Length: 163
Image (tube, rainbow, N blue to C red):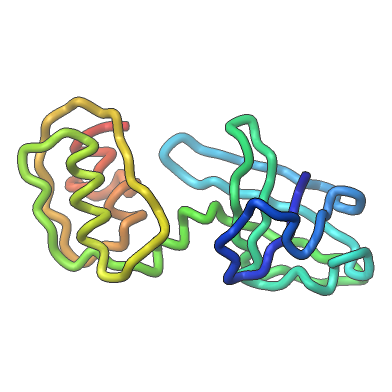
């Protein structure tokens, strides 16, 4: 079931604002390894809950890896239809900041713990890695998504620990 939630929702065990399944179309989930994780869809504006789909709303979507949460980014309305691209809720971390940390001589999980603790603002995410490789990295003024996935940065997690 594809379910719409309010932007500030934290409990996803209920049916939220409502289900979008009956009227949603062109629904697609795209995932790149160590890259973007997107959900895009179209929905009739005047179908149930159509007027409630807004920027920053959260949508729970079934995927091959289980149910995942996506945040609506800039929905577009045209001729009675809403089209939206949604980014995985993980990308909320782009609004956070790692000021300055040094993950020294540690495995992937140690680095993840250091990055999570080094975020400027509290967040609801749990960082975890099973990468056994021992490495070090200094991360200064990066958002956690950059620190983890930006392969153009020498000191990113994917470049130092792999993954």
